[in-house]
Length: 145
Image 1: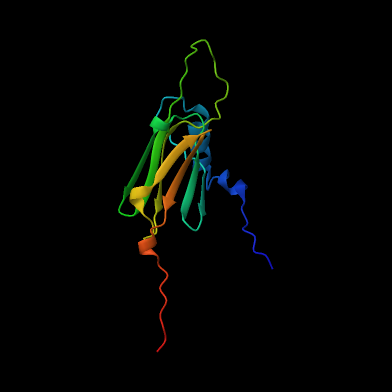
Image 2: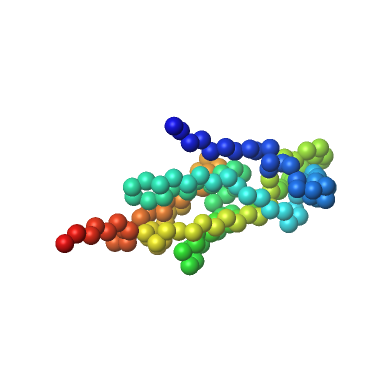
């Protein structure tokens, strides 16, 4: 038997009440670029034998736009994607790309070496490698006497 995680993306778009519907409509449709908007980029996390791989999708950003911190066993990735309207003659009818600030935090297991985290940004994906610390492995074998 296979367990399949059910994901209903439709619930992400259905507001809880009519007030939320209006708030979402006006905030998403008429919020002009340059305001204090926020968004949440999608993240994939995979575990290997040697560590954890975190991939954050943030196309259109530069590596300088990211801030990565480790504090109290929490890894926080934050940044800002700015809307740049260099051509003043454009009249946008629709802007579906998300702009603004974001911040995502992840609780790190005690078995990682936070001092050796590596980050690399290429092709719109921020890749982090969080290595496991061999000294802090949680596996402990107990001999029965």
